[in-house]
Image (cartoon, rainbow, N blue to C red):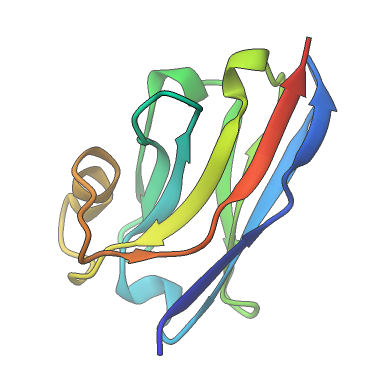
Length: 131
């Protein structure tokens, strides 16, 4: 059974940092594109940062540029989203997800830009950035 469990959210002041974790079970991180999404109140869900570990390619939103990084620990089958210089507009529920299809070329882009209901989704973790 595929499961993704996000954790690490919390309340932080503007300019602060958080590291989110996504523990994965049921498949290896190299077998599917995987990434982070967020949904703020009243807004649509958006892809933040996705990676295809089989070729190392990533895709990230403009909002993440220079502030967020994605990493992984294969031994723990866990991916992380390091978020620095947080802003109030980063406040959202953050989710991790993995592509239902294999790690083909461009799969990180497809996952982040065109996620589908067939993809694997975990429960979210709340991130709140106070001004």
